[in-house]
Length: 330
Image 1 (tube, helix red, strand yellow):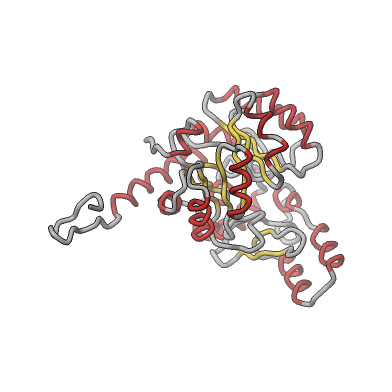
Image 2 (cartoon, rainbow, N blue to C red):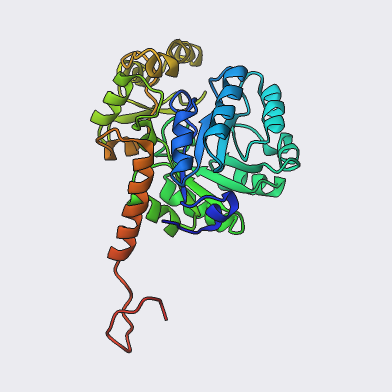
């Protein structure tokens, strides 16, 4: 199956299904490889990776597929400049940059043919990124896991606002999508693709501790919460860490006290070591829409097939002059 959109044409992929770059979960070659080979865009998460491990993973992906893939790089991470130099040398097909401005990288990467996507959380940043010359945008709404926008504007509203603000640049929406219904919703809002994070965290190729995945499978749509307001909002599954952070905020503890509590916990503790009580179990609200762990390729194929089913089931307009269903608006 192929679904052609502005994003699939830009990236050279068959399906408008983007696997989010998720620290630890996709900080390996297996998950991006499976998604790219299935027709979507697999994304290698560089955030927690040592440079030599990142280079090895890129080589493994290149050896395992001739399809496009991306590397997600948080621009604030230690050694980001050296990593950018390596990514340019590797001539990666797609760069997804987040948490920083595009002017520091876009010309360098485009000079070697790399497609540049930039993560944004509002209209102003979207316009600035577009003016800086990025090839496409990823807009992240409040439902997303990890680092949603501080204002927590939903993807439904944020995505439409950005699509109207910068209508001429390919747009990917992220936050709240788990299946073909979500893909249909994203495309109907004006995007050219949807990005799926939590859905791929519950894939067999995701590098997550079994206890982490088990907690995600059991979580409902109301079982996440946001903490860290004022110095780095994250959305996590409710656990001891999250409840302690929420209490600290409710009790009015100082910024220093809350920050100390915040940095005492880590995503690695949960994702790698399996401490799903005291660690940061980052996940989006769409976690509650997923109830099983599947191979990543099967997830891609299911989303695409369900998308086709959704389209065929949508009501079609009825002409006032002719009370029969029509396939387009006259």
